[in-house]
Length: 160
Ligand SMILES: [Zn+2]
Image (cartoon, rainbow, N blue to C red; front, side, top):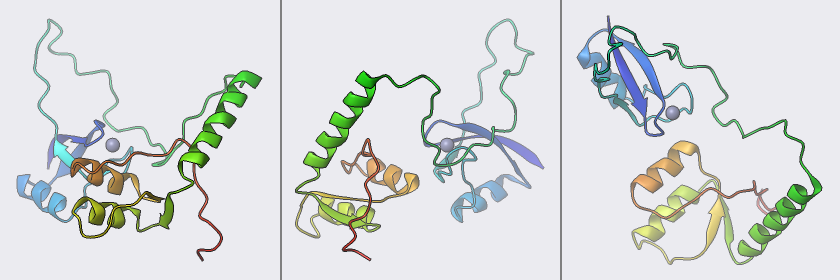
């Protein structure tokens, strides 16, 4: 067995155990390698940490195994939300709603539609919908201009 330091497209680092170097390539090929933190499958071998500094014999303090965390965990805090913050959030939510007024809900075909527009395979229009973190990352990698919305959007009832 050999151990590789791996890192995902979102910069998480973790270790992977493989029978051989070829095993790494084949698992990557079949997209079996995913980041334990975000589930992203754009996994590469992390560059070897340069052995610099006087404490060269000390491994990094980070645990070898990534901490388990929900793949799509939302940011949380126990800081009390003041009325000002709440008001600002409501305004932001309203702003998002206004911005999406002329945008079409495309649900799960968001990634497909955004890509088709980018490559001129269909007419460009404002759309919003659902995409996995992985799909979103791929779109960004292809230079397609998409961004997550600050607030979740419920699918309109007219669809399904
Ligand atoms: Zn990750």
